[in-house]
Image (cartoon, rainbow, N blue to C red):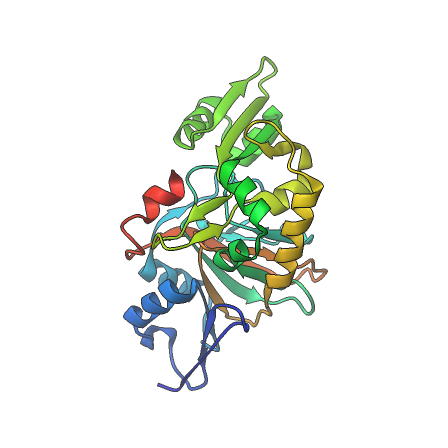
Length: 303
């Protein structure tokens, strides 16, 4: 096959580029899995992909697709499929994060599809959480290893109905229970949630430490919602260090129409640059790999 392989950037990932007239289905499933385990982020480029091929291709390598109930952003459903979602409901930049790390049950794998790139800007950003951890100062490694992050949210009735996609507060209670979230329901039917999880987790193989969480965008967008588990503040000094490392290690994905990006959400953080183009259309699917990453993956990531 006339396929070109090259890193997404000097620091991370792998591109699988079609320089012939090949279908994405001609790629070896075993080779894709092997590359994914090694690099954590794969970009498939130059294939004649559309949203249906994107769905079928991601279906072939994934399981346990999620519908984003409880997610903090509003996402448009594509073609009636609640597992295919647009990420363009606002145009601001989003700092590096692990997807849905403000709850226990995270998607272990992410798929992105470029239906239409922005004419300028709007790059998706990615960063290897292993590299990020290695760049942390000794003091910050020690601080984050000893102190988990607490996420709190106060939502009005209208807000939680939109976020949890239900009008039944009992369904919200069930979701919170599944995610080890402490829930308080007030007389006005507003709710308060509290969830605690580590900022640093073991890698799938157990050999590395990985900085992956929702701390950077959380402190940027909702600073009042994030503190350490003991209710102490996460200092500006720590946040400055984290933001400096993030910008230094960030890899930008300059989208081309039909691109598919496959991400390990237990290792690779992602975000995006701001954009202005209303025609930018990027879709995401949240799921788990339909192959074994490690026998310890699920236990370690969700503990």
